Amino acid sequence: MSRTIRLYCGFQVGMTILFWVPIFYTYQINQGLTDAEYFQIQSLYYFIFCGLELPTGFFADRWGYKLSLMSAAVVMAASNLVAIFWTSFSGFLIHFIMIALARSLTSGAGSAYLYESMKNANQVHLYKKAEATSRTYELVFRIFGWSVAGFLMGFHQTLPYWLTTVMCLVAFCFAYQLPKLEL
Image 1 (cartoon, rainbow, N blue to C red):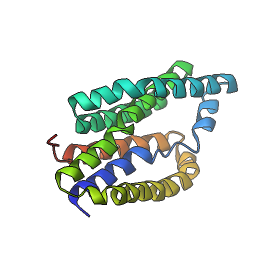
Image 2: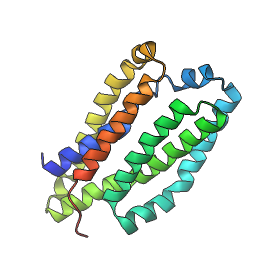
Image 3: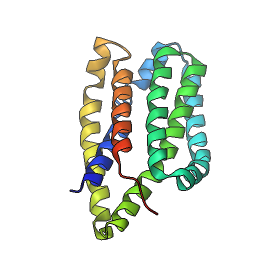
Image 4: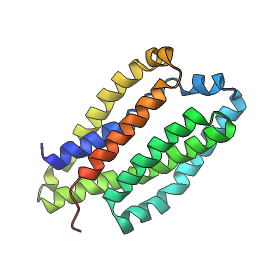
């Protein structure tokens, strides 16, 4: 496996592990949100995520896939801090808007970066395998991360958010080390 593929896999794992996913409903309700507010935030999240796809794709095409990936990692890390320190309807709404932005920044840029780097190395035939390898690592780490979320929350209610923040910063380090693309 090439260095670029390893770095890409590391980035994807760091960005997708999200330790808080199994507990975020409970966390938000414990912080005082009502079911109606929770579902309102979730509805807005998906609407905003879809609305951000084109502008973030333009950003990635214009200023570079690598910059888009690094930006996504920073935004995702910051979003977790919002969920820790601003535990109100407004705070959780901002948290999910930032998640929508981060996920939009990575949705096409990651695959485009990997494809273009493999094309530059005359290895396009390995692209599908590299994407599949990345998805496999993501799923394995998610299974592990999600299986310990409740346990982590038992130590401290915000620990899954802190660990996710750390993983996003690790993802940033992987993205930073990705070679510059020559398009």
